[in-house]
Length: 447
Ligand code: PLP
Image (tube, rainbow, N blue to C red; front, top):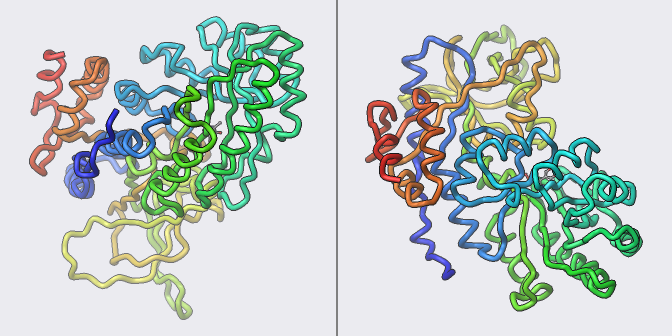
């Protein structure tokens, strides 16, 4: 496929209207419960960027990152495949009608009953990185197509995965030998450079290393057809490395070590790339404390929100994220003061922002936080009775038009209709209730 021009892949999405939307709905809301806003157009934009920048690499979305049902439906319609880490994720993906052949069970250390389940539902692509896993697979899913996950050096990444998974490439030969003895079919090599990438060159080195393991496997007569370059691709402009730069490194390394004519299928397992910027969080100020005699530079106001580190801000613990609150005040005519933000629990670790500048706000006001779509939902605990948050969805008319041309749009349209009171459609810079706008019914009839 000929890559499109940058002009063609320009985002048709809602951009600034999310904040407008949040202002409107919070004005009319009785509830003070925190909620997410999901911008579907952002996902479509990311999909187009991926296709344009890394056309050879087929994404298998890492469900662990965010398992919102509408998100999964959207990704399925876009033709993405899925990386699942356990039985529940597999069931969620199969439950939306995705064929088992579009799933990789990408956890190298699997529960036995889950392997049995994968075999029963027809998931054949399984990752492994140790000998004991091979014996389990031999017993429970002998027809599996196996992908050997290797360790790649990942110092410099915020979330390093190499300490937990991946065999040392030097011991790959031994594992290949055991697989051969057991009559198992090894078809590929995978790696994960670490989540939240800080160093684009790691992808190039990892692809080179995968080539060496590939060659060893080929020399042992394995029919090697798959390279899986894992995840770690940045999901927002705020992250440390640019997606374009990583794409260049990957494309160059693929050309050098896995040129097109060798016929190797290249896949990836992106999570945060697709979801980070598509979800914004809105939380309510439930309490406020003003300092009576603050020391120099200390926050003047402490705000307490009804969401925190044990809820949607787990990115503070796991990603060392920098959180930037956005307030919803219209006029620029206000003074900002030094504030700190805390979550609702009684734990002193539940601090969201140590210091930031905000206008003087009152209890009941809302704050919005962008780039909250990766891992925060799936990692949220129910500590202090924290409940799963509702999700309000926005999609632009341009996105609807693009999606309805894709096979399977009706499936997504049905899912949107089932959630219709939480869906807004953007047309000409204005948001309309999907219910009144009737756009979904129109489009689903056309399919
Ligand atoms: N694949 C595997 C096996 C993972 O463990 C992870 C994250 O932990 C991912 C993919 C997704 O990583 P990311 O969200 O950084 O793209």
